[in-house]
Image 1 (cartoon, rainbow, N blue to C red):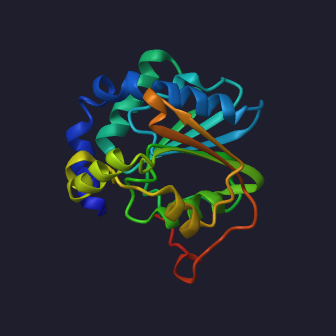
Image 2: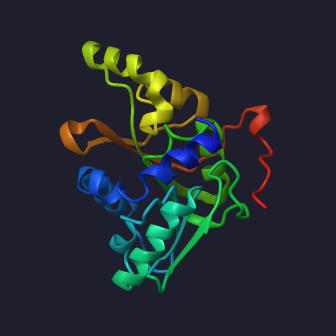
Length: 220
């Protein structure tokens, strides 16, 4: 989806996001943070932080930076931090996930929850996650991928033209995503209701960059 469509969609979702997706996606968020195995002093980047539902679950011993393209969603995250007193080690910024305004190797670990099937270019998203993560660090991606069940997969393909309305690509294919990004997946775990979503853990090895992704511009 294009940036303008994403912003419009999540402006619409901002006030109801927690009610609609809070409990539904909570198991995936908690498992991702558990798998991060955050160590004291580490710097964590959460791409697509949304309304900040995950932020209170991080330990106080790490610094968390959360970015999102939607100011409406970030307003909700900022309100959550103030309400729950979790803002001492947390920074929030409006930023395009495909053009991260951070230097190379800035973070120990980078996580993107429910983002990969939303952005216009998943390959650029992953390239940027790799760039800002230190060598030997880890990437974590929680996302829905096209179901392998023939009937469910067909329904998802039929819903694909409505991606701008529902806010993500229902027919997002894991095999194509892995091929386009060059991801070497270390761990793949089903999460949330009926295992319909998937958690991927990836070591930040040598980046796989297509020529047009090699030098992404930084956000101003």
